[in-house]
Each structure stands twice: as structure tokens, then as C-alpha cells.
Length: 112
Image (cartoon, rainbow, N blue to C red; front, side, top):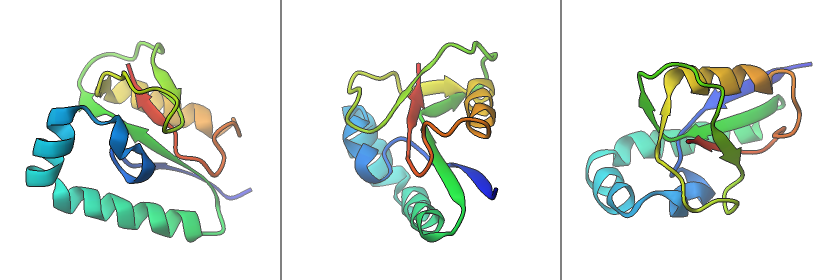
């Protein structure tokens, strides 16, 4: 099996509506537009590939510890998110996706 778990960001594609106001209209529009354009391109390439992919869209990274306690879902499933999550919890979630097909060919968000 060819499995790919790819890192992207909340705010890409159909998850843009999930961003808090200041992220959506200030940070992304003014400061992160190039990075978000590159994430869009990356996601499109992955989606067209012949791999069994999952594209993970976390909030902003923190340096906190792995808690194993975080929220995840598909765009539209939760609008009141905290836009932050530790790198350790992102890694925990991504590693779990290697053995779980719940988000196969999907783009789950990840946050506290």
C-alpha cells in the first residue's frame, strides 16, 4: 500500500471559513498569502496522485508537549476551534493516520 500523510494548514481550501477573523483577514491576506498559495498547490498535487493520502490541516504550531488530547474532523464539522496545537500533537495525529483509514482521501483539521 502506498500511504501518504501530508501536512498542510487550517485555512486551505474548504477549511478557510474555519479561521478566526484576524487570521483570515489580516494574517493570511497580508502576511501568509504566498505560503497558503503553496499549500493549495501542494494539496492539489497530492489529491491528483495515485497514493492513499490524508492531508492534515492543523492550526498554528506551539512548542507544547504531546497531550494526545485534541480535536479533529472535516471542514464544516466544527466552527469554534482554537487555532493552535503543539507540534508533538500534530505528529501524534499524523502517525496514527498511517494505520487508520477514517480520513483516507480526506482533509481533516486538527486543533485544541
